[in-house]
Length: 335
Ligand SMILES: Nc1nc2c(ncn2[C@@H]2O[C@H](COP(=O)(O)OP(=O)(O)OP(=O)(O)O)[C@@H](O)[C@H]2O)c(=O)[nH]1
Ligand SMILES: [Mg+2]
Image (cartoon, rainbow, N blue to C red):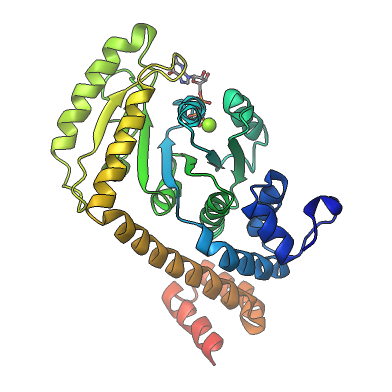
């Protein structure tokens, strides 16, 4: 087997080199493997698929944690401190930051790096910003594969950060075991700005920035959220979501998060819920991938790609209904 260090400048390595490097926890190879799975080139996707298959037996041994919340609520700071605590307990922590803004604003990636400064310097931490491609089956499937790669590389705590806008938190929910919603005390109605659906998905709601003159507001938010929680339907796994306050900048209240995480892991494993949840997730990603492949096949079909501009125009001017147009294209595809 070749040594990955031998040809660091080569764009792509062979399957064995990727697999061996990842399993050895070689961070350079891990990064390049993630780049490979993020690639949309057909040849890369083929290789990435083989790599994932090869590494599958080495995955699954981590606790996967998703962190979501509105922009600026303190997700990266929270992860920086929480990750540090995990490392001090002997864990190896990988952070995948899914950043929907990174396409328009390259600066935000830098921002994340700097806000996880302490964690960045830890040999037992690996931080990877995941640029959003915004395509169906794109970003989220890649992020999931990246997290599996990190598991194969020996990281036993995987943290996925996503800004709570749009669909991203739903996709992240489908790739983690434990889902944390980060919020902060604000003026007036604490529930404003947090979608009810996202709250219902959370296993833990953290009220961050509970420091300085925000402490009273944080306690109020806590009480309001506790009341709101009573109205939510019970989770099928029997887990009752927790609500906690913390200050990430002051590192106050973060060890409680680790206790809750332990409690959750015990609860999920004891009831067989962990494996059942992951099994459901795998099926979800099968469907997701099928949708992605079908959609790609469809639009790459020569006759479809030729007809599409014309049909789109007909639909735009109201000459033909959307449904009729879709049916016609589908017939053409299946012909
Ligand atoms: N007072 C206070 N400020 C905090 C706390 N946590 C984070 N901040 C500050 O809030 C700002 C945003 O923090 P980030 O960690 O970048 O927040 P984020 O949610 O990751 O932001 P995006 O990734 O841009 O959505 C920074 O200026 C932090 O220093 C906290 O617990 N207390
Ligand atoms: Mg951030």
